[in-house]
Amino acid sequence: MPIDQRGSAVSAKSKTSIDIRTLEPIMFYSGKQDELQIFLNEAEYGELIIKSLSHDQIQVKAVMLDETGEKLNWKQDYKGLRVSVPETLVTSKKATGRVVKVTF
Image (cartoon, rainbow, N blue to C red; front, top):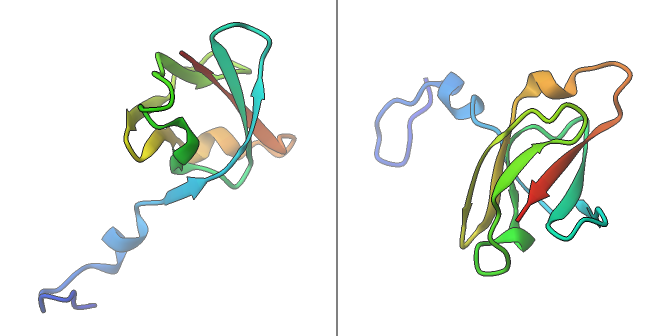
């Protein structure tokens, strides 16, 4: 079992179970006054941090999948917009990506 910097045992499973990525995704203005669309490729899942959408830049009201309208868990802070994308949303064989709709 691995040992952390303090000398205590850390399970390998707990270290690999969290998938956090900082992204600079392709973003599109949807044409609506209060909406952006973000393209994510099929390998982008877990907790995604979009730095350019920090709360000092824009105040987000909702985050959802464009295709289905399914709401995604999100949090916005000074580091950016954190969106939780479940792996099950990106496993479709025909999908090459997903579009996430952000309203503000």
